Each structure stands twice: as C-alpha cells, then as structure tokens.
Image 1: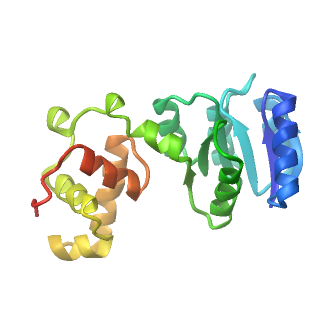
Image 2: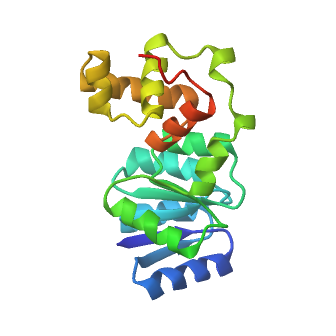
Image 3: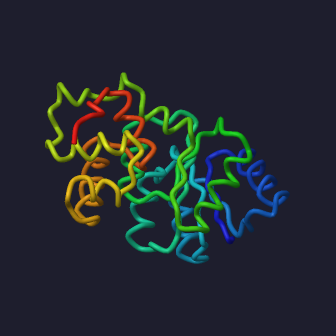
Length: 211
C-alpha cells in the first residue's frame, strides 16, 4: 500500500516510517510536516492512504480530511491524535475518515487499521471508541428525547445482538428501512459502528423487552 505520512514532528514521522517499513505494511512514498504540504503531496502522488496527525500546522487534520474527501475520494485518510476530543472524532467520522488512532495505541493497531483500509472498512481504536462512549460526554436518551419510537426499537434490538435482517423480520419492515434507521441513529447519537450502538443501548438501559 502506498501511503503518505504527515506529522508536525520529524521524529514521530521517522518512527512511524520505520515501523511501517519493518513490518512491510506500507510503502511511505511521501512525508509532510504541515497540512498544506500534505495536500500537495496527495495531489501529486495519489496514494492509497494518508496517515494524518489531527493537529497539523497550517492546515489541520480535519480540514485536510475535508479537502481530500472532496477532491481525492479514493485516498483513505487515517487520523492520528495525542488527545482527541469526542467532537473531533465524531466530525472526522461524519466526514468520511477511514479510521482514527491515538498516539498511545500499540504498534500492532496501525497494522490493523491499514488492513481495514485495504478492505475498505473503517478502523477506530478501542481507546477512541471508549472516549465516544464515555457517559459524561453523552446525553441520556430519556432526557434528550432525540429518538423516535421506532429508532428506540431498533437500538434496543441492536443491543440484544440482532442482525439487520433479524431486526427487519421482527419489526415487519424492509432491510433497507432498518439500515436507514441505523444510519440516523449513528448521526443523532454521534456514534459510529454497530458495536458503539450496541454498547450505548446497554449503557443507557433501554428496555430489552421492547418490540
């Protein structure tokens, strides 16, 4: 996999490059110390992926992501942050980030993320998932009243481990309808992925007998 790497610190870039090359996980075809330089590299090299520090100087990681998704949608953008904020993570996922890692992640996580990119899947570090699911950062469903009755039913069944097809059968609706509800749930709750929805349903104590 051809990859460009962007981090404001040259030593960090060197360490990541050595890790990738030693494991044979990716070929680093370009490096940048700021977001503007990175965008120029992406335009010139058209890599398969870009590993991007969130707090890049000149043009930050989120802005790089937005421009890359707009002009070079084939380039998967994997974000890396030392101390990400939940709002930053949600914004990145809504904008189509291919993944999100913390700088405290174990080296093997980077390999997992790159393999997910190869499969056109999204990878979220467990530390990032836990950050999103922190109860202190969430508004309880009962108080916010942000979900419709049907969305609550879908979320409840997700919490019970039901598949999209099973939920459609139980509720008497089409699979496409369930997929639409799932997408709106993730948007409303600022979450990404089935596991996040399942854990949210369990944490918020939705009635598991609701059908």
